Image (cartoon, rainbow, N blue to C red):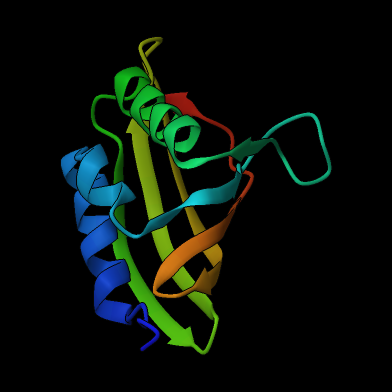
Length: 128
């Protein structure tokens, strides 16, 4: 029987993001997952491949922004696709703060995330 990822699973994942709990976040990611970041040199941002590399990238965000938080998150799943909408906020070590709306587009397989495409409004950081 094929497992299905639910909107509640995504809500739980984002709650884990807010706790900075990498193990709980990665619970819903496949080992061979791909993450396309909000920024980078390529048209798609940057591409991070594999669960271990993605976990390290998430952990680096939390290390650089101790108050990183995804607020007002909402989610829906339809077949092998899902969407999460959120407002991200966080303050870097330089005292510059980011607050912007964004969304993740997910591709799913057997109840796991295999692609996470992150999109975020291009709002300049401001002094916290």
